[in-house]
Length: 457
Image (tube, rainbow, N blue to C red; front, side):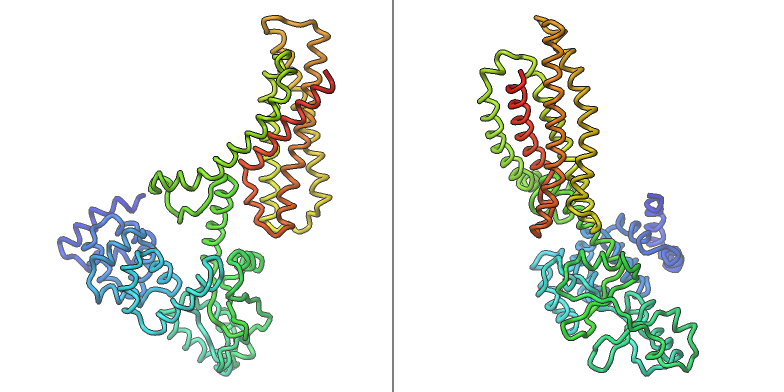
């Protein structure tokens, strides 16, 4: 926010032609801060500012611009300027940028790229969006194992401007097969005449280009890596996944899981809530809601089957919504906690241990909620138009409390067991969304409640 206050000053420096002062200001900033200023300028002003920056800084600043600002810049800047920006962008950033553009615009830009960049885009297109090969970076540093430490440092100095990271350098043979990796720290500390082949580490952790992106993020997290090498079936290095990619993956997967658990279908394409069209939101949210509305017909049918009994017991009708709602909430809580545990790969939690823990928790919750249900029932009976005797009131309230306890325990077991079962079936547990669990526990809750009160009253 504080950098937005500099937009008038930057615009004034541009108008007065004080380019040296402007360049000095921008070079002192992190690229994301400089981009936040440029986002507030007009397209022609952005083009002038980017022209002043060195190629590597221009690339970084452009990468942090808002997507719509990037698109406006591409549409308004000259062909040569756009070509220069595209060629200096990192491979994964360039692929992500082009993917956002309309096909017509993208088809005009791709011919501007060199053959290697076009081949990279074609190769990415052979993978699904959730596979590592679709988003890996090909801008990695490679070294020959015969180079000395001194020569390797000089080689990294040459490669650095066009690489995403040089802290890890990958050692490959003449066929491109990955032999090992060496950190910049190890090169600096090594004897200058020691070959890279003797410095490198060979206990490699790598991943296949066909692997799921979640697996890549998990490996980077578990091994605390700055970058993860990606290899093909022959063991040849084809790219890397960096730690910032892992952060993006975790954020994307968390958003998708959140939407699934909320019963939202389809994809929002990372669009903001206010920017996404109303019709698209309706299309994404309606299917699950409509399905659950139909599901409630079953619940209504069960309740109607007990109509004659409920007609003579107004208190049962008054307390039934509370029992069903509490059961649905407990089931949703249990489902959410288990899905989180499964997503975190807590492999030590076996099914029996998981269910045993949830049963104990649900018994504690049931005890508390049964007392609350009993107290509510007594209060509602006493304030009614025709208060019953204390004995009858206590008996009815006790049955309602028992029904509440039974519903809570069953809802917790259902909410905890279903995601575990779905995971065992190799289906995403997040697909068992909160609305679905709530509807299922409402159905079972109504059945348990009505059967118990019928049997005990």
